Structures are given as structure tokens and as C-alpha cells.
Amino acid sequence: MIIDNILKEFSQLKLLKGNTNNPINYIWADSRKIQKNDIFVMSDEFTDINFLTSSIENGSSTCLISKTSEFLSIAKEKFENVISSDSSSNQMQGYIASFILDHPSKKLEVIAITGTNGKTSLTHILYHFARSLGIPSGLIGTIHTKYNDVIIETGYTTPEASSLQLQLRDMLKEGIQFVFLEASSHGLKLGRTNGLQFRAALFTNITKDHLDFHETMDDYLKSKFRIFTLLEESTKEYKFGIINLDAEGGLAMKKLILEHSLQSKINFLGKTCNYEIDKPRLSINGSEFIFKIKKPESTFHRNLRVRSNLLGGFNIQNVALAISCWVELNIATERITTFTESIPRIPGRFDIYYSPDKDRIAIVDYAHTPDALLNILQSAKELNPKRLICLFGCGGDRDRTKRPEMAAISERMSDLVILTSDNPRTEDPELILNDIEKGFQDKSKIIREIDRKNAIQIAIDNLQEGDILAVCGKGHENYQIIGKEKFHFDDGEEIEKAW
Image (cartoon, rainbow, N blue to C red; front, side, top):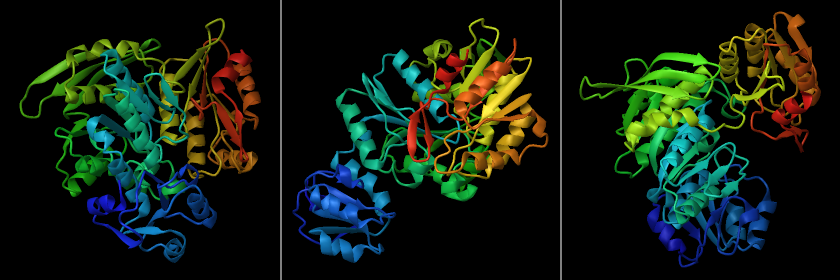
């Protein structure tokens, strides 16, 4: 491929300097990944000239830069070829990467899921459905990227644009048909998912989180809404969206869709909607509910009795959304309820650890937002413990406003609360706990212990027969970030050691 091919494909790009016949291999914003004839993206956040120098040393002779960038003159001075973009260079990267690789997502069935909570669980449930039917499938999300025997630790819920497109290309080469993708608000806003051709876009909910990045809930919502504008761009012949209308943010998302007059088919899960949950029942062994399918063009209803091995009311919502998606895909829908009773353990999502004598339970969950914490504690109380103990902290260098909110929830729902470190990063752990403590009315039910290992031991020591301990915040993470260092730490391992 040459520069001229890219310029002809994207009218918003212009060659400010250089030769249109210059060869192009790929595109990266990370100078460390640059190889000969790759485009270097001078991103909107670009500040360090050393990265520019590094990209040239690694073989790049071409850069992509926004026409309004303050570094435009430096780019012209340093690079042989300078491509300017009318819009953000970040936003163009994914489109260009997809074009260079001949649009791998066009040949895949990409199901994208966004929402504050539930993305990981939902992608795993859908992945289980596909695998149970023998459909070669891949998974891209918070825990890892996975397909066939390949597992890639990405470090991001949604990989950056060029890496994501390469992963999709590799999946295609390996015979993968379906890909279940977690689309984070960061990934959507920063353009990591640009260039993807979605078959389906699913929305779980939106609750307070990531305000250190988005600053306002309105920006957070609009970033999530981006998943539906990408669905609109998709050239897939049959494409659809599903919104959990009964979840927080569902009505706000529907309003945005109506305001933008999207033409893609959008279905809803909720009371009197296309899909509905009826008569939910929970137990220590799982859950069951009636799943109602209503065809909008008729009064026809079809009711499915669904049993799931997953615990917690929030997982009823996740399973119902997964079934809604599968019904729309129209692949062996008559068999789907046979798979809901054997969903594999989802690491760090209501993950149960029993005491050696089986008379006490510890639950490990990734809950790190007020809504997620409330859901976990409500679901734990539905198991009818004698007492409920909650252990949690809050991440450092992240949204501070949710700290007292999470405190108030834990105080209201728990009999004892143990405050400890999550990933304090560069914040003082004691000051983080001070922020959390401001949300408590009765501080007599609090135990403070900065060291998370010691805190888990204290929690286990306080756990009596019939009690439940909810260890929240880190879930599947097997590390703790203190300062700028990452140390091995696994909540499940520490619970088993404590017992």
C-alpha cells in the first residue's frame, strides 16, 4: 500500500509534505511499535518530542497529525511525509488501521458491549453460548483477549486501535467467526473502536464512574452512546442494538438514540419491551426466571423458562441480555436455555470461595463503583447470611467523588465494614480511607487496615458460621499497584491462605 491509496480512501486527509508513492506497512501511535514504513500517529495528547525521534529511528518516514496541532511545524521539519487530518488524529487511527488490513471486522461477527457494569460477564456468557454450539469464537475484554489456544494480556478493557485491528485480523486467520468485545467508555471516546463493523451493540447500564476522565456524567453517557453511532456506520446487512431499558441509564440512552434518529434496529429489554424478565427467583444454587419474547409486529409471545448457575440478581439481567442477543442472531435459539445452567466461572465476578468446613462463604468481585457495590451486597444478602461483612477500598488517582457514596452503601447493607487499600497508586492510602470514611454515619462498625493481606485475614477471623464476606474492588486482578510499582496480589489466594 502507498500513501495515495489512503488519501483516496479518506477525503479528510491531506498530504502536506512528501511523496504520495511512499510505501506504507501499518500505523501506530506507540513509537516503540513502529517498524519500517509505518505511519506514526502524533496523537492529540502528544507532548514528548523524544517519541517523535524514536519513531523515526525505528523506521517511520510518515506521520499523521491533526491540522490544528501545535506540533505541525515540527512534524514538517522532522518527517519526509506529513499527512494532516481535518479531525482528531486519534479518531482516524482505527479507520486507517482497518483499511490497511482490509477491514477484518467486515468478515467477522463482532458483538460489542458497553456499560459501567456487566460487560465482562455478558461477553463471557455470549462466548459460552457460541462455544457450546461449536462456533469458533473470540473474546476481547478486561481480563484478556482469548481465542482458540491464544491468550493475550492487553492491560486495557478495549485495546488501542491498531492492536485491536491486528487481533481481529489474527482471529480471522485462525478461523474465528464471532468476536465478543467489551467497549469501554475510554475506548469509545478515544477512537479505539473506530473502523469496526459491528453486527450488534449492547448496552447494560450507566452509573457513576470514571469522572476523573470524563469529568461529567453527560460526557460519560455520550461516550457510551458512541457504540450506537458505530453500529450506524456498520455495513453489515443485518445489524441491531439492544438496550437494558430497566437499568440505570437505559431511558437516557434511548432518548439519545431517538434524538439522533438512528436507523439501525434497536431492541429493548424491560417491562413491556421486546424482551422481558418475569418472576425472577434467586437461591444459593443459582437463579431462574421467565424470559418473554414479544414480536413487535404481532401479539405473539413466547415464554422461555431459564435456569442459570450464576448467582445474584444482576446476573439475571446479564443472562437475559445475552439471550436477547442470541434470539436476534437467530442461531439455534431453541437450544440456548440448555446452556445457561453451565456457564463457566467468570473470574472475579461474584466468585465464591467456601471455608474448609463449608459453613462460611467469601465472595470476590470486581465491584469498584457505587452501583456495582450495591448490586453485590444486595445479591449477597439474598443468600440470607447471619451477618454480611464487606471489605473494600477505592483506587488512587481516580474519581474521588464515589468514595463516600460507596461508604454509605456498605454501611447500609453490611454488619461490618473493613476498609483497606485497593490500588492506591500514587495517592496516600490513609488519605483515600479518610475520603471513604466521610460517607459513614456510624464509624463504630468500621475496621481500618491499610495492608490488604492483613485486612483479608482480619475479615476471615471475624467470619462466623453462616456469615458471608464480600471482598470487593479487585476481582480478577492478580496484582496491586502501590506507588508506580505493580506487585502480585490475588484476593482469592489470600482468602484461601487466611482459611
